[in-house]
Image (cartoon, rainbow, N blue to C red):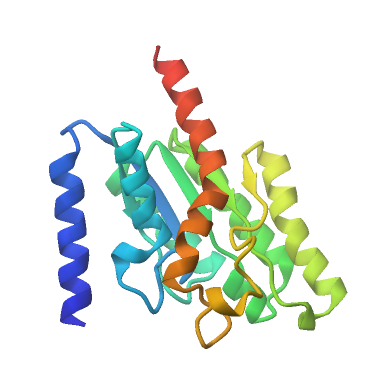
Length: 211
């Protein structure tokens, strides 16, 4: 546990020292997929995102507010204080997997995600949805309804969607931990590559707006 906290502190300090004082933040509100469950924090895709932003000269600080086991209801409850504290320019929402694994109603998940997007937009920030899928053993009807939630929320609120953050990772034994649910360290760059096009498009549009 001490090692994890030391790594987290070192990562935060490195980010703060490398960024200008007026750097804006990108906020990730997710579950174990973004919290680097089973890994050192610096191995996770969110930490790799911070590195890539630095490499491309984007002056943003990435705030990882992901909590393993979190649901859309939990994310919705935590969001107001996060928006107030960090005042992010972009909020990436990576939630829903635990709703699905618990068999919670897709309608409730859709309501929670919609409320989160509305709160983000009301704060003046932009939102990006990071979609997830659940194993087929939950049944065709449920899995289809689950996946459709992300599409419907994206379209209803006109926010971009990464359909499946674990594309090319899920189902690959060499890229999944022993539990078959959480990605390995080797999978993290792939997850970043899955999300990067949408993030980069936002970054470019943001730069154009500033110019």
